[in-house]
Length: 404
Image (cartoon, rainbow, N blue to C red; front, side, top):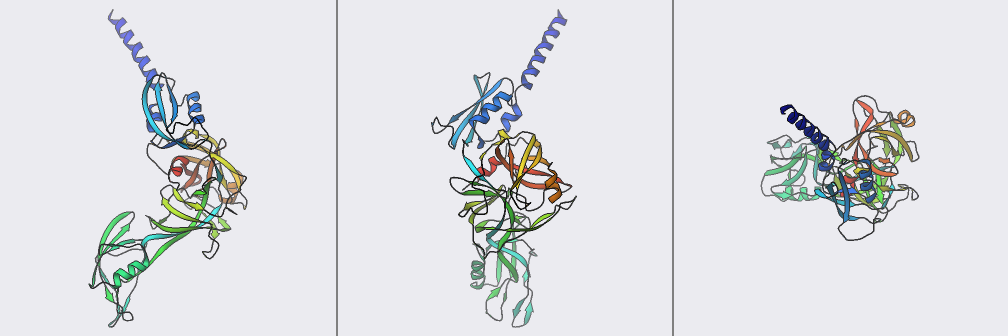
């Protein structure tokens, strides 16, 4: 009798384990509020058993519309046996909205909020050249954000605050590696102006090269780069910025421990193509006013959320050859992410043409669109230093959230 009870217990335990293993708890509970999805993606996930054999998902629009071809907001409800609700998640309903596909290098110029330290310098005083006394040595890339409690938004404001001071002592607030720090500087009076100087070379702009990811077909809002523009490990706060066409001059191929780069040129005297409003961990955002030379008006795709991403064949779009082309990659891993991250997926370059041109992923290709099953699902963000044929990408979910 006792053996029968143990046998029954074993059967029940096996059934329970089988039941639990057939519920995709990791997939369900890793989905954050605000992820992007379409009705089609939810249906495909149910058919493929993504959430387990006993769980189904359904989408409800918040705006009560019956249309599935318009963007908006909604809720995805996960139900056990199609009856018992186990989780509810708010989503962005991406509908059938299309975007212009990028893949072209662009010139980026950003005016920072604050003043970026370049180096220390001597001040010419009545007694000769002097170095100002500082409680902490300021380094290249440090971002000055306040002086004597007054927030600094430009070089002009920095000069006004310092030169109008009645005190020789300045309390400096600065940012280093995205952490707020403080220092005191004993200013010196400049012989030529009679005003105090901090003894620092500073600037308030950052420029570089990145790749355009997409442009919203309806609003001309754009996303590019896939990661933040930084200056000596500091994320740059945007006070304003511009986008330019840039010319590809050559390519330094990537090698192990040497990521290589696109050698491009742009001039800030050239025509401005658009404005930059945001610099975030997931890319640079703004609006393109003139699309000529940046996108092909005949090349559009639907945006695909994380539910569209599967390990296997995909493509990156790039203009490294001089024309916009698709290059085959293999998605090795698509991560479950409850929080936003710019390393959502891992891929390997398979296309021999791209390997011969660049050696894999090189600097300047960040932002290159990643396409799978006819949808734009993300963008290239980083390269593996030890292997330039491998790289990271960010889900388009995180990029869409930052659109203006």
